[in-house]
Image (cartoon, rainbow, N blue to C red):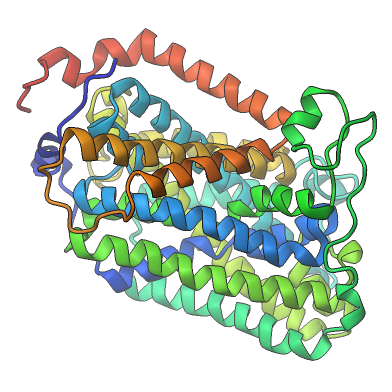
Length: 492
């Protein structure tokens, strides 16, 4: 269960003709790719939710807290991605350092993260498209606007988006660096419009109080207790106050999901030893600065209690009497979120590809289309499942479940860095995480702290998913593992 796949063996697998991926990405491509994935639902959707429910204007501080946690994890990812430049991200890193069962667990976790991440993005995209439709007085029937809308049941727009993108992926559409750069330029332009134009509509009184006073939980307890502790002891989670900021950070953390997706492209990077750290850290820094600026502007334009949940940026400009800006933002958000959704789906296929290549998932998933040369079987299966989930599930429920899965991946990667430093000190490392083991331990502590600030229901759902994964491993993965079948010294 704890047999490891050597780094050399992992790299040899990438040289097999039937599994080889083209190396075409540079540091600039990775940074653009990272910014393109990171700037998405988190900034366009979740800003309004956490400001209204958890932190008020102090949402900017929540972005700072989440950014610090991600920076600690990013330094660990950078070492692994440059040392083990193989598709699969945290799954591959865990397999090379901790062992097969932990690798399986994190791979199973990534399946959940990317699947629900795609669903959240699709739901966010749907909200902005509906906002655009409102500008021209087009309205969907209430029942087809999704669970987050009054009277909504099924989000038909989110459902259709995932199905269309699934077809695109099956047909083999490739996002070139130039197209990706254009899409990122649109998204960054929209963000800059929010920042610059919104500065003229800020009302100082909207920042008072900057940190709204904590609401004492019903049924007892302290306002300093984390949501997990509050749920266990049967009283309502804290809103606002200092703990509200940490609760908000555990939710807006979803906004930073993306740099770990960059790590899945390690196998397709020209000079991964040099370019992966630059792409991961550069994209994270750029997005953190933009997020903080947007949060300050939006909560200054409109009082946090009045922000909308589905399309806060666009609706804030509508409330200020400037529907033109609202239309521009909705268009940019819709275009940008489409790309995020597509890339998350692509990331998930990379994880499936790596796991099936190792035999932990059926070889059925590693068979490519005879004409399009794409992993069409898992793409179709996952696309249909995710489309259904996006259609019927509330964005509030999806976002927190994605967050706990990502934070768990951060913990595993940080542990892996320390283990691999001890077991394979001879490995050439183009980038070395500083202050090991202090920094990885800080990363583990920070990630676990944000996990504690997620609701108890989220922990329960996550535990159920992990338990199912362990059962699947013992029923299938352990017996079909290529490493297990051919031995530690297998050459394949």
